[in-house]
Amino acid sequence: MTIVAIFVVIMDVLKYCFGIDPTRKELKRIQREKQAKKRKPVIQRFVYVNAPPSAVPLSEQPISAIDETVV
Image 1 (cartoon, rainbow, N blue to C red):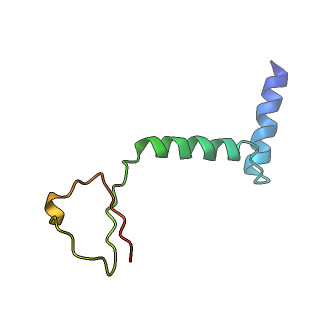
Image 2 (tube, rainbow, N blue to C red; image 1 turned 90 degrees about the vertical axis):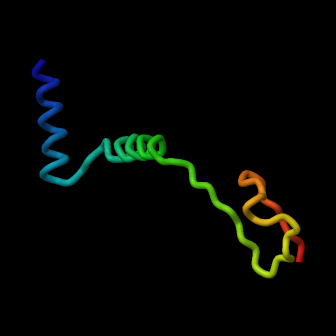
């Protein structure tokens, strides 16, 4: 039990006195994974410059399809 207590004290001394945190990379990875779960997907509609006028108005085009135009 004393070995565990000494280990905890040594880790605290390294972290708070010397600024060395051996678990920093793992903590950052866990935080990134949590933030990724909370994010909502971003839906983007591309607007092409100098694209020929479309026969179908934008309000009637499907949102999920992205049409490529050849210039």
